[in-house]
Figure 1 (tube, rainbow, N blue to C red):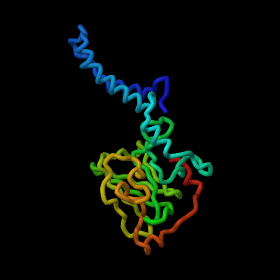
Figure 2 (cartoon, rainbow, N blue to C red):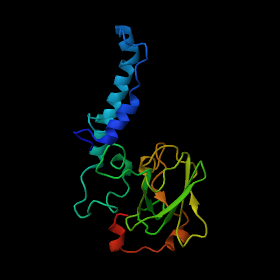
Figure 3 (cartoon, one colour):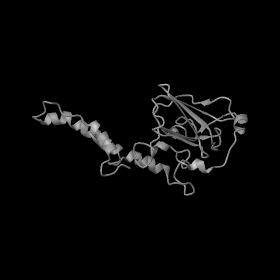
Figure 4 (cartoon, rainbow, N blue to C red):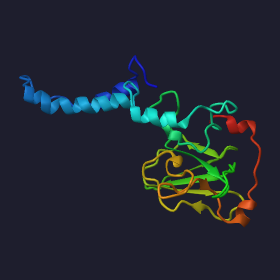
Length: 219
């Protein structure tokens, strides 16, 4: 988390939120203070919260819901499959890299069997493209210095067993964590977990593999 002393990145965020007083503000009245300083103060407080300098109960609650780490899985690319990655890999934590997109891919819509080496392809509204692959936990992530999509963004998944990509029906507009919308059970508030194929013949032909040392390496 961003902590005292105030980091340059957090200071820059708050400074950009703070507009200068007008040139004719030498005689500062109470009305001028109210008009020009109170709104920036409120915005700056929000900026400090984003930097982690002030408590954010909503974010803290989201983190608490995730629960503890699995002691059998080291923190890294293989941990917490199926969870909303950007809860921690977002603007609230300086210790974790920020991910514009991240999620977990499973074999089929019924069972949560992770699939490795799935090609996850992105196309944003500006026509920029990026591809990455899943590891043995089914996890994939996009680093901010690799691809910063301009929403909306369209996504597809594909394995070597599939003759064509399986495309998401609707684009992503702002959410970085796939699991915020893709969680079980499927229902009015969720599309269900992400899967590569819904045809039994197709997903039965998808090869599964054990984890390799490279799967746990942060790129």
